[in-house]
Picture 1 (spheres, helix red, strand yellow):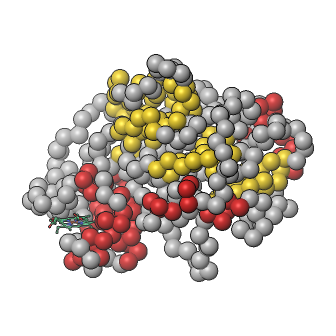
Picture 2 (cartoon, protein in one colour; picture 1 turned 180 degrees about the vertical axis):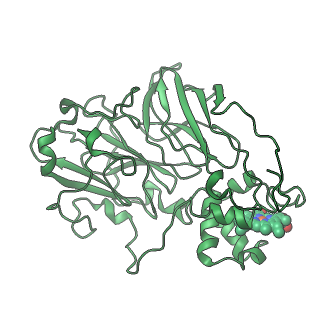
Length: 376
Ligand code: HEC
């Protein structure tokens, strides 16, 4: 059923920035309820506005502006970066200019401040306000203002307690729900069949505070929804009510689906959540309480990112890496290109890399120079 309803661009039931859960009121679900992959709320479902949404969680999101909102996202400013910054940052002739990799570690606020009132003001003055914001958000891999607003501790819809995870109930793990990536959910596991889909009603909705795009497919296990966001937070929500158990702050936006697994090291096994971020960070966090187990990087090149869900097999986590360098490869000031896609196998217990292989055998090396004498 789910396989038919999902498509590549909109794999789950996101209503733009809102994570919506639809439950069919057939009484056929377990007491924990179930999160299902519905493409859209049914036509007769109540609109998901704060005024009449069934959950208070939407109150977490700021009120929508009345004018058409400006497009935002952590990827919109890469072109600005390659056109207006890379000629110095990453250029040996400007040795005081922090490298692109060093800029990637800064917060969007710091980069924006540098461009508006700091050392980069002369450059910032040549850009529009939109481009200043976009470049700060792209380089940092995070949206301006997202650091504090996304934390669960600031939210009204918090769960009153955090009971131990149960192993039962409907589940959807990783992107493809299983190593074969079939994206299939059985009727028994979903708790509903295809003929019930038309009667699904909105149960709750959760707004990512300050978020602008939702790419990450949630996972479902033990009555909880796990989902990452472009504001760099991971959330654990109650599948039945949408209340928030905890949040975890990463170093960049998260687009990957969530992969759940068990880490068996000394001591008792831990349910862990594995995912990657837009700065090629890879994480294992405790699925019960959101505490970090380990974090590492799958690649050190500043233009690499993890957008696909890691795959799990026993004690091994397979992490694919891609690059955003091709966004503006035509910019003549840009020495295109040096990032290479890869797959790494990590030990799930420690995050230690076991091996890494690149998707093309050839290593980047200088070839020719372009019309502006930029080394390609
Ligand atoms: C003409 C060369 C040049 C260009 C173009 C340039 N920078 Fe810089 N940038 C520098 C140098 C040099 C420094 C170090 C300045 C210092 O430490 O005094 C710097 C420092 C910075 C810093 C660090 C500020 C801090 O708080 O430490 C940031 C952030 C930054 N640049 C961002 C940008 C962005 C974003 C762009 C493009 C929109 C850009 N720069 C374009 C040369 C440049």
